[in-house]
Length: 269
Image 1 (spheres, helix red, strand yellow):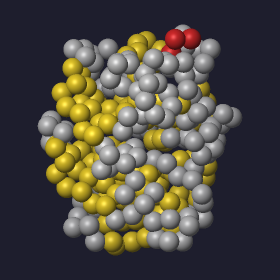
Image 2 (tube, rainbow, N blue to C red):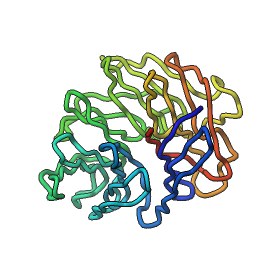
Image 3 (cartoon, rainbow, N blue to C red):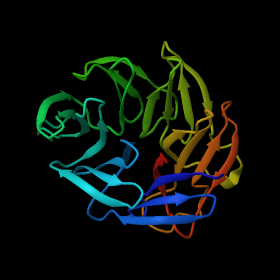
Image 4 (cartoon, rainbow, N blue to C red):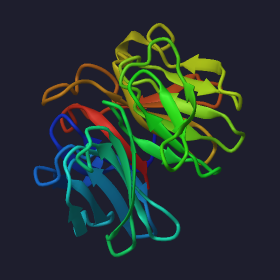
C-alpha cells in the first residue's frame, strides 16, 4: 500500500500526514486544543477543513499549520463546507434544545440557519447530490431534508454507532457500521444489497473492531480506518488501515503500531 493520507489517531489525540510507502510521518499536530476531531474535508490544493468538538478549523495540509479556528459550541460531530462557501456544522444540542442540529454559517461565520430534530446521537453528516442529508444516528442512517425532516432510513443488523454514510454516483449508499465492524451497501431503494469486511471474511490478524472513516481510491477501491479503542497502546490489536477492492475483498492492510494507537479519521491526499 503506497499512499499519502491525513490520519486522526483518536487514541492519542494526534493528527498526522502519513506516507505509507516510506512510513514517513511528515508532521504531527497535537489535538489537545482541538478535542474529539472526527471529520475532515479537502477544500482546495492547500486547505483541509477539520471538524472537532467545539467547532472546526482550517489546516494547511502540507505543513500541518492551523490557519483559522471557529470554536463556538460543544458536541460538534461533523463540519462540511459547501460550494457556495457556507459551512454546515452538525452536532448535539448546538442550539440548547437537547437534540440534533445542523447549523448553516455564511463564509464569514455568521449563523444563517438552524435545523433541529429530536434525537440523542449523531456522528458524521454528508450531503447527497440531491441536496438531502445523511445523518449517522447510531443503529441506522437517516436521510433528511435540510430541515432534518426524515425521508427514509437505512439500517442493517449489527449497526452500532454507525459512523459515516455516503451517496455514490450510481445512487447506492455506503455505510461504515461502527462497532458492527463491517461495510454495508444499500441500493437506490434503500435495500441492503451487500456487506463486506466483517470478522470471518478477513484474516484474524485484521481484528475488525470499529469501522470508522473511509475513502475511495481513484480506481474505486476502498480504504477503511479500523479503530481499535480509546487511549494509547491499541496499535498492536489489529490492522489499522484496510484496503478493499471493488468486490469487497480485502487486498491489503497497513499499520504503524509504534506511532498510531487507534486510527479513526482518514483523508486521502
